[in-house]
Length: 202
Image (cartoon, rainbow, N blue to C red; front, side):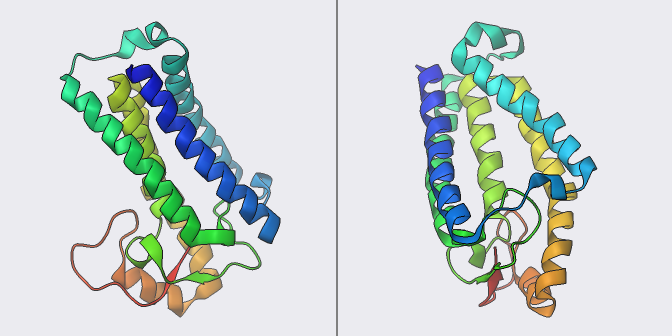
């Protein structure tokens, strides 16, 4: 049963993401990943391939990932299911808010616009938060420490490598407006203190 719930969560999130990304490409084009720094491309592959590979291997045949399973309580797996469906809802919310600004790279499109609504009022990078939430959920559903470990690696890599690189791009584009936005928002989770500013960016 948990195997099929994993499949529903993964396909649900990918389906929503694919739909909104196709719309964004049609409206504002796309940016080739080859324009990103090579070290970022390589690092993304090092983390993403084992993470996706572990999840897909579990879905195809749980015994393939039995070597990295752990014996946790069943309620923890159901918590993963709840987080997985929360990730589906979050993906729709975030992608509707970001609209045509969404990109597969850290680079900004020529038509990139400020966003003042939705999750961007509180979090600067809610799409990354949603992605990490998805794989934490899948790791809990599968009761698999390998997937959870790479989800943690992804979280740390995004927060301390990808986010600073992307924000340099955004500061270069939006200047003082983005600096002001940063002072009132959290990078991947809401700030505990401080009111959200009136203007955000995607």
